[in-house]
Image (cartoon, rainbow, N blue to C red; front, side, top):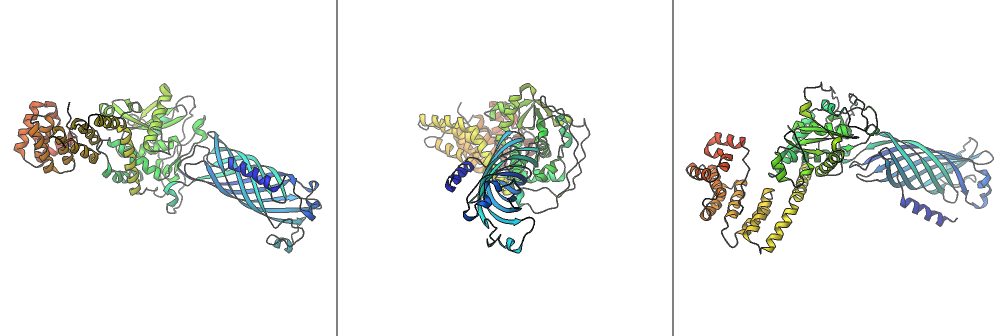
Length: 610
């Protein structure tokens, strides 16, 4: 077999499959470093002729080859691709008490495929260079060492030899940071020989994804001692899930620091149309993604075993955790913002949910996919699969809803507030340095992007239908105004204004005038808004939306006689609407307190033609 043929075979093999050593889970958003020690035992496959030294490397002269490889592998974030370096030592024996020491350095690349949650197949290809030294017995002469740099000694087969190889291994992760690998390896030392060997070794896996890699060096804190779970068979929900509330630390200063810092970053960009709790959850999820917090599967999650739950601070410091650890972290952060949370257990899986501030009626009216929500105990819950680390909160929400539907009657729901005061919290004293914090500007940017995606999902179908109606009606004021109302209800004020102004192109259309007045109120342009309401009143003086706009704008301007006139008429025309905005009967601080209590500060009654 000539050299070109061998190289082509190896390149094709390496191109189809490659790689080594990763945590035995689906790719996570964290990059991963893996350090391996791989002893190997090989046997020569065939010798290659070497001219005058052919008899030295004849078939009868070879003995088994013993060696070891130190390897470093890097897996990019959210990828199964692996690249790395290898440093190895091998010794091969010949006749007449001769042996050859071989020092090798090389590069490798490949892929990792999951077979089971803890068992993976790795295939790889490699290229490198070998320095070879032939010696007799244990004696090494000065000449032989020089031969590593320059082949002067006649006993040296080659001072330096290119080497290519490929192989496959099975790797079993027995704890998150360590894995055991065994496999076969083929190597071809150009102009020397080829060998086929078996490897057996161990790898240490280190998550390095996200901003954690840029975190200032700090002294690593000792791991916290965590209380163990009771036994949890995989054919039923874990009995210990309800006990996860014992590990919550919502008032711990570092938890509060992260949640409050995230809230301050996203609050200026919150969408008035979307539930505030949902937006807070989006912000916290993005903050944890920026910190590179990863999901690490453990055998203990899918077998009958006992395992420990980490405190939220330990999970932040480690940058990873299993389903229980991440559920405790998320619930602690959400609870620190006064959001109700719950733990959910399905066969072989633990995740969490949080409650919206909206009522069931509001949620069904707002969200197009009500089947992704849980309606329990008078609250609306959003299920979050915290092990979903690659996507946005919307992705984790959809995964949680799917997990809930799939489990059906086997899903168990444990609200945290219902479990309070029933058990003694676990004491886990934190002695480590302050956990990392994300960049606030990046949190705000990611938050705005994800909220925009949520809005686009919710309005997509309705927007398409209204755009078609605008086209079919030749841009009638009614259809243009309806499209503007859709945008306005989702806080897309600039897009809404364009449609309302277009509706006024040919006529003084009262609903569009009311809506432009509403936009002015939201932007604190009260006098300009009053002008739009007065124009609408000239067209439809008894319309409740017009009367409410006149009362609200005059109330802001402290024109209380005009407020009373418009509000009294509103009570006659629409008592229910007048009751909702009852603060308009009051003045000063008393009116402000009543408006806050009724939650009507930013509520707008949009003008629509029935």
